[in-house]
Length: 256
Length: 368
Image (cartoon, rainbow over all chains, first blue to last red; front, side, top):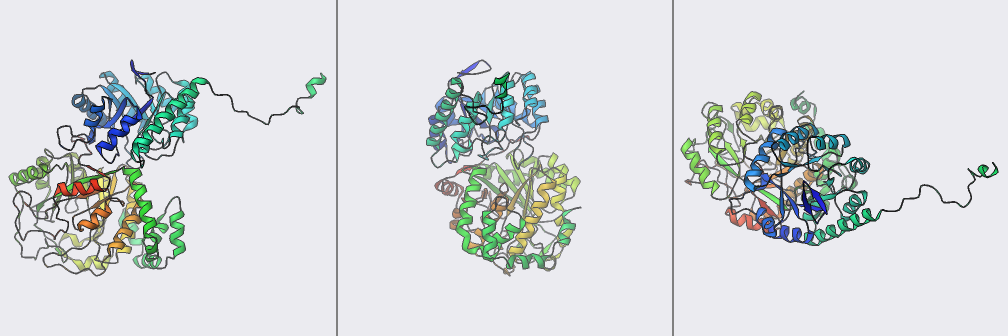
């Protein structure tokens, strides 16, 4: 069971609601994923309009909402979006995203820390999207974030765990759940993150832009379960050198 | 150094020569390259790439879907005024054209906003002719204050302004500005822009620099296809974008590729682009710039538009009226140019869905 801020989830797969071809495609994929926590961009929501293709399907499935501040370019805009999200969706849970660079959409560590501290004080349950920087994750934990969401690779890149070695350090030092976000392009990437000991992963593009999003969502669901099971089972160590019956380098010890 | 200096150093003739001497081998190298540089882009833009159109289209489609998802944004233009103090021989608003002139009043703007809002739009492009004294900063601020009450994301396509003016409008809630260069060929530019401030090519070329310095969220570039050799103009547009995106890294960029359309008193294109070549251009842009937004207007006919929806384009307009007041009170003889795709918004949205894409109406928070 995954516990974030006292809330328990059976699924360790978080999903997103962007990039789907239709509301129906999203609904079937989310159902197949088994995910219980779904992020959605506040900037895309049109709750009072006939064009709401995002919120209704998530509500229909009874999933917990994790509004995000995608599009915000600084702490001020993120805080503004967070307050709107709380009012519009009646949840204090928030995925904090601040990316001033519209090209790779990489998170701004300075603004994220400022916004996180402010929002935690306002009573939000803050899950910040951040670079795979172990010190930054410590600082975000210090100001009261409920989890950290370091990236595996740039958003939407499907490149996998390019930040692998730093993710290991973050996981080793973690005092709150570590959710690997962004860059996970295949179920094998998700499984790898889970085997490393990540508490959860968030996957959007890889599911939404698959030829068959529901089938891909199912594949991710199973990969996350497998990865976690392997982590729990305690994988054997990888051998570091050639196995040898004789020990030419240390045989002198026998003569002593 | 602004783009003006870089533009002065870049030779039109050398670029043209480079483009027309590209071979199939150059195109294949570009298609295999992991990172496509400007030289590869020239190969993809060249006549030698014509036989590779399908390969380029497949790549462009995949890159666009990965980056932007299975979605397509919708926007609509709102023409505020057709007054113009320029003499441009390809435009219906041109000063010497004897057409009825109109500037929308605050009440008329409100009526237009309500008419547009009822169609579902939340992103709007405000268009005016260029008339500094009657349609200048004061008017823009008034219009912006009204329009911001209705729409989350507001863009301008008006005369180039100064850096402090752009900063003021940014502060007042303007999100994006399109400043199409029309052509990067100096002599052709001079030939088509006969009188008025638009005749000053430097003022226009440096407008995106001023926008970047003012921190505008979106900056739109493009050349008017038909005025000069479109391949060379597109190569210069790409240079311009490459220059801007490294300097003003917080802004996003949008490309347009308007084809010259019939209008009152208009000229014929000297070098038209075929439909196939337009597809090649869009795909070449996408292969070079994975992240750039590309918008498509109703200048293009419906079949062409439906095909382009999945090939690299990221934003489309629909049901556009190119005359001030055209949404609440349609009238003849005021339009800037004749549109081609005249389908109503729900029909266009249905066509987008049939293409396997979700129409996106809102992608911004009003208040940012």
